[in-house]
Image 1 (cartoon, one colour):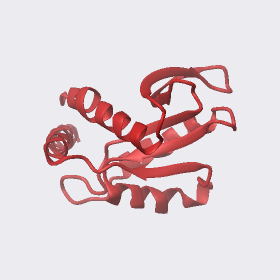
Image 2 (cartoon, one colour):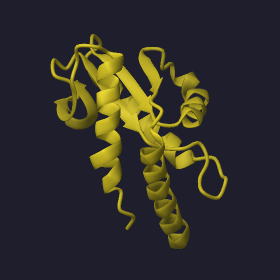
Image 3 (spheres, one colour):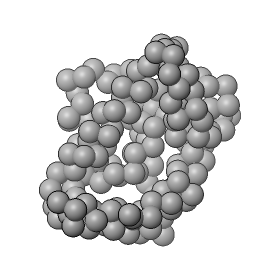
Image 4 (cartoon, rainbow, N blue to C red):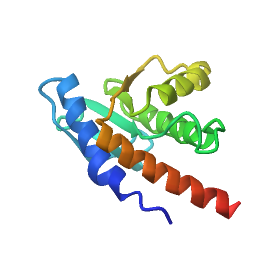
Length: 147
């Protein structure tokens, strides 16, 4: 199985710090929160006062083989569902590490009415972007081999 540890240990912490600079005065951590359904869900970026909650999406618009990343879009749509199960007063954000994937998601999700969720793009520094691409390529190779 592809080692996705760099996403949790390098990419997501970088994005949380970036988000804290975009929304000054807040510090973000990964955190388990109760949903309106009563079930808990582990969100990628939660402000200390829980007023702002976000999902971090490290996908790209196309797979390694050039196909549209439908699996990534499905995962992002699931995140919309989790975010919608938060109280209405919670500010909801989705932070994408790839602007192309953000645009693909925006096109695919527009019929869902995602106006209440702020979409943001965090450009990664070259070294982190390269690390992420390696992880995604390895996961893609494994997926293709399993088909």
